[in-house]
Image (tube, rainbow, N blue to C red; front, side):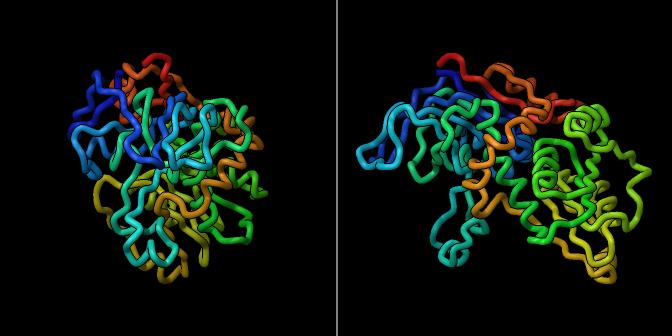
Length: 333
C-alpha cells in the first residue's frame, strides 16, 4: 500500500509500504476513511521535534472502520466506525499515576510512537479508539473529533463562568473550532482575527461573526483571549488585548523562544494558561459532532489524495492558504 513516511525534518516521502497486521490480542486493524493534516504535523515536519522513529507514518486525526480485531478486543466489532485518541502517555510517571496523563512528561502520539492515518490501513490498540455513537456522522465531520477536543480543552481553561467578550487569535482549524465552541457556550461577543484576511473573512461570514481588523484589537478590550497561532507578534497583541484580571489561554506551538513584558501579566493580574493537547474532552467532542455538524461544515476544508500531501504541506506552511483543514481521502490501498 501507499503511505506518507516521515524520515527526518523536511523529508516526507510517499512510497510503498507493507500492510500492517495485528500482532497483539488487543490490536484493531482499521481501514482509514479520512485523515486530517494537523498544525503539529507541519511543526514536526519542519523541526523534527517529535521524530522518535524513522520512518514513521504520521496522522493522529482520522476516522476509520474496523476491519479485524484481536482475540482480546471486547468493545469493538468489525464494521464499527471509530476515531483515535491521539495521546500515548507512558502510564508510569507521576502525572499519569495521579490521573493527569495528558501532562505526561514522556507523552507520545499516534503517528509518532506508532504508524498513523496517513495510510489506508493502520493498526491501533483498542484503548486508543473511541466508537462513534452516531455511526452515520460523515467522514469529513467525524475526522474533526480530535482537533475539536483540543479546542474544547482550550475553552475549558477559561473556567465555568461564560465571559462576555473573547478574542480568538488565528482562524486556522483550532481557532475556528474554538469560535464554534464559544458560540455554543453562549459567548455574546467573539472576535476572530487572522493575518490571513481571506481565511478570516470566509469563516467569519460563514459563522456570522464580525470581521475585526488589526486596529480594532484595542488594549484591554476583551475578558479573555485564546491564542492559537504560535506567533510572537500575535502573542503580543493577545497580551495587550486582555482586560485586567482576564484570561489568556495559549494553544499554538512556537517554532522558537519568544520574549514579552512579564509585568503585563503581573500588574494586570492576568491568568496565563498553556494547553497541552486535551484532558478528558475527546469523548465530549465525539458526542458534539452531530450537534455541531452544520457549523463544523463551515470550515474551509480541502479533500486531497495521499499523493498530494507533500504539496499540501507546502501550501499550508506558506501561511497564505485559505484552507483551514486539509483532509486526506484514502480511496485506494
